[in-house]
Amino acid sequence: MSSSVSSGSARAAKTPSPRRALRRASWIVTLGGFLFGYDTGVINGALPYMQDDLGLTPFTEGLITSSLLFGAAFGGVISGRLTDRLGRRKVLMGLAVVFLLGTLGTSLAPTIAVMVMSRVVLGLAVGGASALVPVFLAELAPAERRGQMVTRDQLMIVTGQLVAFVANAVIGNLWGEDQGVWRWMLVVATVPAIALWIGIAFVPESPRWLASKGRFGETLTALKRIRSAEAAQTEFDEVRTLAEKDSAQAGSLRDFAEPWLLRVLLIGMGLSIVQQITGVNAIMYYGTQILSNAGFGTEAALTANIANGVVSVAAAIFGIWLLGRVRRRRMLMTGLIGTGSSLLLIGIVSIVVSEGTVRASIILALTVTFLGFQQGAVSPVTWLMLSEIFPLKVRGLGIGLSVFIQWMTNFAVGFSFPILMDAIGISKTFFIFVVLGLLALLFVRRYVPETRGQSLEQVEEQLRAAGTR
Image 1 (cartoon, rainbow, N blue to C red):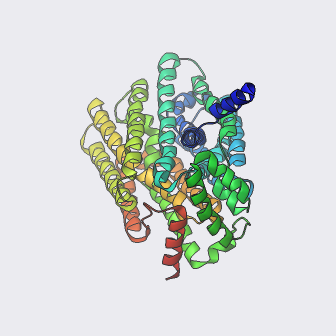
Image 2: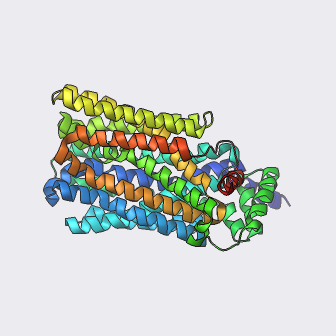
Image 3: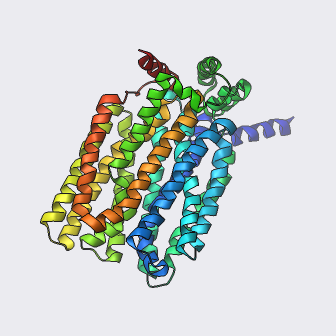
């Protein structure tokens, strides 16, 4: 009898509370965001060392950087479709394997051609994670904590970029004279890829995806792992009611023929473009080169670039706190005003201050200010709203299509930036981003809805009503 009681107690001790289980699941899922951040940020410091080993020109430099982004565009669409069919957990586990294979391919690449192909493969995983992780988090989170949980993904993205910048600086300063040092910068990403593959075993499937397939028994079981019994039952009733209105089939492109759904898709695509045309990834991918051109040496630029990563993480943490207190639209528009003003000042400083340490220091301060607004307002709001606006039936597909547009815009920025810098200089290049930022501000003011304080089901009803008026 006593052994029976003790074994029951042991099982209870091993079973985490719903709050702890939810916290654990969210951090494991956001390893996908960490890998996204590391793999996009590491190229920043690796490129200067690749130039001699691989014989890079401004064109091939842009090609290597943007090839990952090209792959990511298609990874987002493929992932969006697969997650609606196969479920969030299975696809995320598969992405962990693709992350690992892509990382090994880039680390061992002997030529530019192999590097580009491996970066495309890695991009498939990055794009897949960018589409899947915020959806998975939004569907696991209770309504009152959704903003905080989904923006954890943004925090992990910028944390991954910070870790990449620190790894680049440490490896570059210690072993910068060694041939092939950039390979060690790239291979570090194998560790979180393996951790994600192992950790996903501890994450429940999305209750909303299970409900969309009519698997209501499993839906309630999944909810009870991450909610109190009473909250699980209440949420189950709401999710089941909405799921029964829709077909258990995965959504298709034909669904977007409905005017209200087409409007939602266009808003999602617009938000994706807004996030990228601020020019954020010109700084995240080429920050070391920007600082070198402004007046820092290569090793000094690598070290100074860590400031960009530190501020990005601090701003993301502040953004998570702010999202629970400020309306989404206001926060997004404030961020766009801040990013545009910072880039305008970078362009002016590049014209009026002569090259040297003073100019480099001012530009570093302005890039840090830019990233404060971008990572503290623009990025967390756009990722959060993308996870909120699409109805359950087409959520994976809608986000996949939006992320495709986001990555293609990112590709255009990543590929063209070194070419524009070489052709027209840093000031005119950043002035282009200022104009694009103004257009983004007008779009948000005119078309983007407010979603704060509503459940995903309430957001759907609001958008459906707005689109049919």
